[in-house]
Image (tube, rainbow, N blue to C red):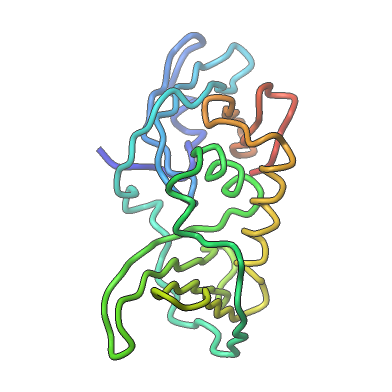
Length: 195
């Protein structure tokens, strides 16, 4: 089984009202979830996140590597430590995914300057923009960004939005899928955070 970023409407169209679609959903930022949607009589599907399910993305939905990455780097320091995100409720991940559409990967290693941990940020829909947030023991947290879209700045703003919402748990989020795409909502389908 593979994880998906988007529930394809074609899947909904193939189901009759009352059918249930269960899928491992990775919206882009952070961990993956188990999404349970029910197909409705109006031709939409709607449901909630019911658990965690972290799978590699389905090949057709994986973000493609961008060979045209911009090299006009801006460097600065940040006070927000992305390593702490693993200790925070995954509702933060869903909020950041909904508000930004940013995709992340993380990694660690050792180089001539010692051990490092890094979060890479990209948006498959906005070529050339990228960011890398690098943490080293005993050092400030470095940010490098390039391209037209300030990805790390958007993550920081989305994190602040999640905090202002009262730090809702992942259990409070849901998804609606229509012929126009999928939207992520908080508590109620009427409270859409974004695609």
